[in-house]
Image 1 (cartoon, rainbow over the protein chains, first blue to last red):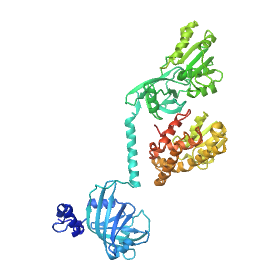
Image 2 (cartoon, each protein chain N blue to C red):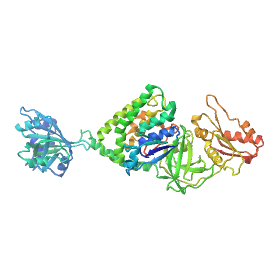
Image 3 (cartoon, chains in turn purple, yellow):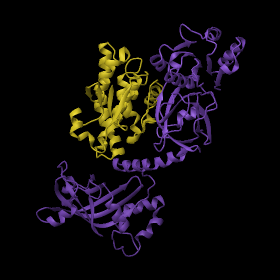
Length: 428
Length: 201
């Protein structure tokens, strides 16, 4: 059966070019026999209903073609029946070229584009203008309820032929609304993707914790506040205790690290730790910094303590190097609460890189001394002088780099201080 | 005692939380139930007739508006680093406070309100404003670490939260490398605190 569009558009000149270019044989079949009965099928009707614009060509009195872009809300080009379409003619620039052309020649050619799907539909037909006075009922069918531009007239087109074309050279383009729809889709997929990357709960301990606070202490040290995931009280601990926490590494495996609890154990609601990011290390601390966020859930074991503070009233000498301040700060706070005499000596490179310097200065002004080895005017902790100056019953606690711990232990041995009076915890 | 009438998910509250933390000022947060409409209660309207968070109560002195609170805290507690004496520098900071109240509020913050809380907005306009302000901030930060001067200032704090929350408004902030580098500098500052939904590396 012949395709009507071919009967219309394969004119003798077009056929001649097809012959010259060698495509005539392929297209001839489209013209054989009786012309088909033209009717817009379900696919065409749906496609028309989804459009928010189309191009329309008319023929002028002088034979010039005139192509116009028509736009409106989605579905403004309406299917009235399977051979009739139409649209409301919104007030435009008042040149009336298309409408004028239709007065002399009612033939139109429409091009309907679906850029994202790379589809297009061509429609040939005969058009007439409909106005409010003569055919108000028909005009009413062409109005879009949610688009209130004034309607001057309607154009009704009797469809004579249509044809779907090859998508080869259609560049996909997207309207704002289409982009919005894609973004919504992408956003809905995002949480699922994030969930795949970060498992909901890290670790397998019996104590469920949630990260509820994060605070940058220095450029490389970050403090984390952890609370019971169900709002319950946390197991008690004593200064010097640590918490072993799970960390997801970038390769997907889960490791764990122990971090001292930094605060006096007087708040049963929360644990606080401070983590130094060591980029040259095995990746645990950097994965923790990168991976732990507000709301991250961890299952841990209750805190453990290998660095016990003495229970009696003997005075204490607290020595911290760098991030070793974390258990020492908790000890200082607990001793303060208990009213036990102590001194804190805290050494590091420069104050900006050392956690809690300001806190300690503010809260324990008379108990703390600071040493900054890389400051413009460097100050150094002299372990011999320090250990020589303490009373015979003072208990000594040291936490920090191994060389600091070794120095304290060797000096103590040299001075005849009993080993049980020197408590230490080392950080690798 | 300082009380902050606060809402966890508010970027305007977060800029105040950031400054309080940078200044190491102790304060108590008093959550305002925005979803439940507490901001429209007569009690709250007495504190802030605009019915907005944040509001700061410093020993009975009430200050509304996040930019105004930043100014108050900087001038009262911040010293020269946060409240410079130089007229020109102060004017530059004030200009960014205006940008925070105007373009940032009507661009990225509004898009976030739409996407996260479903408010009906003029999306195209908000996107246009957002694209413009992101482009300007990104260029501003091309050859400098901070928006004004050589160190972090109120200008950075006023602009930061809603830019770092922009991904929640469907904005690809990764397309602005200078802004992302600035995020990283800010996050490394002692006292920095994050909030839920804020940009992560």
